[in-house]
Structures are given as C-alpha cells and as structure tokens.
Length: 463
Ligand SMILES: *[C@@H]1O[C@H](CO)[C@@H](O)[C@H](O)[C@H]1NC(C)=O
Ligand SMILES: *[C@@H]1O[C@H](CO)[C@@H](O)[C@H](O)[C@H]1NC(C)=O
Ligand SMILES: *[C@@H]1O[C@H](CO)[C@@H](O)[C@H](O)[C@H]1NC(C)=O
Ligand SMILES: *[C@@H]1O[C@H](CO)[C@@H](O)[C@H](O)[C@H]1NC(C)=O
Ligand SMILES: *[C@@H]1O[C@H](CO)[C@@H](O)[C@H](O)[C@H]1NC(C)=O
Ligand SMILES: *[C@@H]1O[C@H](CO)[C@@H](O)[C@H](O)[C@H]1NC(C)=O
Ligand SMILES: [Fe+2]
Image 1 (cartoon, protein in one colour):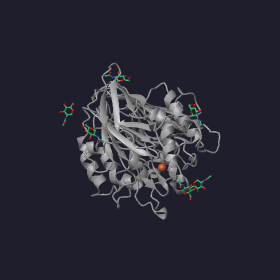
Image 2 (image 1 turned 180 degrees about the vertical axis):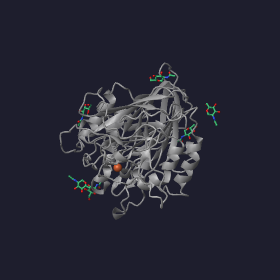
Image 3 (image 1 turned 90 degrees about the vertical axis):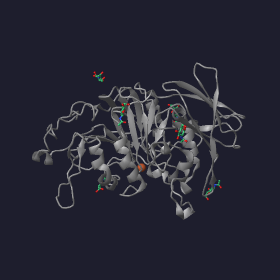
Image 4 (image 1 turned 135 degrees about the horizontal axis):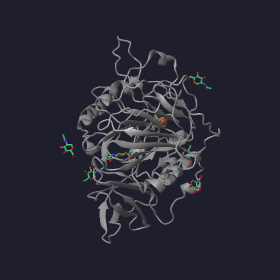
C-alpha cells in the first residue's frame, strides 16, 4: 500500500475542524477469501510427538534475566519426570556446561499435565550461538539459540510480532510466513492468546500440549516474550477450576522478578537497544494496585541513552476501530496513557482483535470529567498503536469495522498475518506487516519509525 491521500492531520497543528467529517487513514481494499478458520486435528503433522521414551516435547525458550545473559529453557516429558538438567555449549566449543532446572505439573478438571521442566541458564555470553540438550537419561534432543548483543543504544535488532496465534491451519500459515520472512526476526514479541484450549469442552488442556508441539519449531530456537491474554485466564469455577492462569503459569515462565515485578503477568526486559514493558490486561491495574505501582516506578527507570526504543506489549488494545472488543481497553488507557505520553513510548503492540490496525501518533489525555475534551489529537510524544491479533486462531477474523474510519486510524485490514520491527540504530526502525496471502517478502503495510527520544519528528504516513 502506498501513499495515503486523506490529509487528516496538519503537521504540528491540531486537528482541523473540517477533519471532523473526513475519514481516517486507509481501510485496505484487500478482500480475503472468506473461509472458516478451523483447528488442525490432533493427528496433524505439526502435533507429532517426538519419538523415543520420555522424549522432551514442547520445547520453548524465553529471556531469563533483565539484560539477555540468561535464558529460560522449558520442556515437557510425558512418561516420567526425567532429568531437569540442560547441557549447553558454545557452538565452537566442545566444553559442555550444565544447568539444573525445576519440575512442576498441574491438573485441570480431569486432565493431568505431563512433567513440565523449566531451567534458567545463566552467565551466557552476549551475541553467541549456543547449542543445548534436554532429556538427559532418556531420549535427548538438541536445539540452539543465539543470545542478543549487549544492551546498547545503536545495537540493531529485529523483533517479530505475533498475536492470538492459536492452532488452526491459518495459525500454521502465519508461523510459516514468519519463518520465511526475509527480514529475519530474532525474538518474537507475542501479544497474548496462545493455544485457545479454553474454546474446547472443559478447556481440554491437551490443546495446550498440541500448541506447544506445533510452535516448537520456532519457540525452541528463538525466545518468545510472553504477554498474557484472555485465553490464558482459564477461569472455570463451573468445573471447579477457580485459579486464574493455572495452565499458563505452569507452562510459561518469565523473568518478572528481574524487573522488580511481583507477578508473572507484568514485567520488563532489556534486549539489544529496546526496553520492553509487558502489561497485563487481565490483572488489576487501577491506582494503588501492584501493577500500577510497578509501572509507576518502572517508567522513570527507562534509560533512553542505553535503550533508545521503548516498546509496550499488552493484550487488549487501547485504540481499536473494529466492532470487536470495542472499548475493552478503555479503562486501562485512562489509567496509563498520560504516562505513555510523558515517557514517550515509541510503539504499543496489542492483540485481542483478530485483525490488523495501525494508528497515527495520537493521545487523548486532556479530558477531566468537566471539560468535554475527549477526542484523540495528534501528539508527537504519543506512541503508535498497533493491533496485531491476526495470528489466525479458530475464532476467525474480525471483519466488522466502525465507520467512518476514525482519524487516528492510519491503516486497517481484516487479514491474518504477522509483523517485524527492525531496529537499525537509535533513530530509525523499519516496521512491516505481512499478510498471509502474499509471498513471504511482500509487505502489506510499512512504516519507518523515528525514535521518540532521539529523533522525534513526524513520521506519520497520512500527511
Ligand atoms: C474428561 O471428561 C470428558 C467429558 O466428560 C471426557 O470426554 C474425557 O474422556 C475425560 N478425559 C479424561 C482424561 O478422563
Ligand atoms: C504446517 O506448515 C508446515 C510448514 O509450512 C507444513 O510442513 C505442514 O504440513 C503444515 N501442517 C498443516 C497441518 O497444515
Ligand atoms: C535466572 O538467572 C539470572 C542470573 O542469576 C537471574 O538474574 C534471574 O532472576 C533468573 N531468572 C529466573 C526466572 O529465575
Ligand atoms: C543511562 O545509560 C548510560 C549508558 O549506559 C549511562 O552512561 C548512564 O549513567 C545511565 N543513566 C542513568 C541515570 O542511569
Ligand atoms: C457490525 O457491528 C455493529 C455494531 O456492533 C452492528 O450494529 C452491526 O450489525 C454489525 N454488522 C455486521 C454485518 O455484523
Ligand atoms: C540510522 O539508520 C537509518 C536507516 O537505515 C539511516 O538512514 C541513518 O543514516 C542511520 N543513522 C546513523 C547515525 O547511522
Ligand atoms: Fe483475546
């Protein structure tokens, strides 16, 4: 999609009166073939159990500390607990090191999980390829990962963006497109809603296992940074399951303590030239709550000299012009948006709405109950808001949009896909969204991001 033609905002000036009747940015004319989105059956190739007695399966890794010198390796064994040990070695070295992990398991209604292992590998060297082996004592499997470069202002790094993935045929296409994208993502920022097991009777937790096996081809080789979504809540008191996030919390560990968080649902990491803040749409965020107090002290700690790029992940979007989950993010927006503007967040990625949308830089923080000023306005200190909940889960696409397109909405399209955020240096990052119908190199929406701290110029695409 090329240049957009509606002059919605005038550079440096507030919204024109005449813009009130104008449409927003672009609603893509691409029409996706309408097909039912269905889950791959349990006997699909992507769900195959690795052969061998007690073979590790569902292998996944995520950053284990605050700066990228540790990695949490997780896997599941089905026959017996087996070993918690991970052997790892630098690619060009024969010297094997080992780390000890821990074991957990849980039950959910009439399901009992396999043996879930988590091991934090520490003291890794930056920018180094490591092999690692799990399954010691029984069937072993070996994978590899590359650690990020040391945190610093001009370190190029490429993040993949995936949301609401699920395990449908479309999910498989999204993941394949991400893998084949010539812009090679080094770490996935995942904005929530993983397996959609909760759409099955009694939240059939075998679908958590099948998702783990499906995604392993990516999650075992590069870290996925986890955000919690509503499909991770698994709150089902009607079948005796009243502990929210039970399957998720047992299966996916994150380094929340390293950022002073008191719960695994909100936390931060630094990776290369980015400071990434993960927020929880489904944990309390009002004033005085643990998440509020954490975010209040976290934002002033962000050092843009060290990490120029400030990225926020959350599940429920604040700016969303589809008629799905409409305004669900509004209460959190009211609480935190003034901070995002004050601290000049570069970009906010959210999911939840099963479609794609990108906003202009806008804020809506002037309203004070009595003044009636409640309209989003152009704000060069505000983030760009991107909804990337189009991973392809079984619930299908969100296609119904509010009309006319709001002025703040730069681009929207109801297609499955993924994106990459390719940081070049402290001032520039190239962002590209890819729809599943196109070849893997084709972008459906692109934008050069100018860093809000180092190069806060207007880079909007519709002026
Ligand atoms: C769990 O309960 C469901 C519904 O009653 C049943 O179909 C399924 O076979 C049960 N699973 C196990 C492991 O007992
Ligand atoms: C999933 O995608 C992979 C890679 O493109 C392919 O090999 C596999 O057959 C697909 N599986 C299904 C069930 O679509
Ligand atoms: C992993 O180890 C590092 C280094 O000791 C530590 O800072 C971090 O908190 C640990 N992470 C977890 C999840 O235990
Ligand atoms: C911010 O990071 C830079 C570069 O690492 C460092 O020199 C500076 O002391 C840090 N500032 C603060 C307030 O920690
Ligand atoms: C789209 O959403 C609006 C608002 O919820 C609703 O009134 C309308 O009927 C929907 N249109 C379709 C085609 O579903
Ligand atoms: C930062 O990257 C952009 C895009 O690649 C480039 O145009 C610019 O010259 C770079 N800045 C510096 C200081 O290298
Ligand atoms: Fe969701």
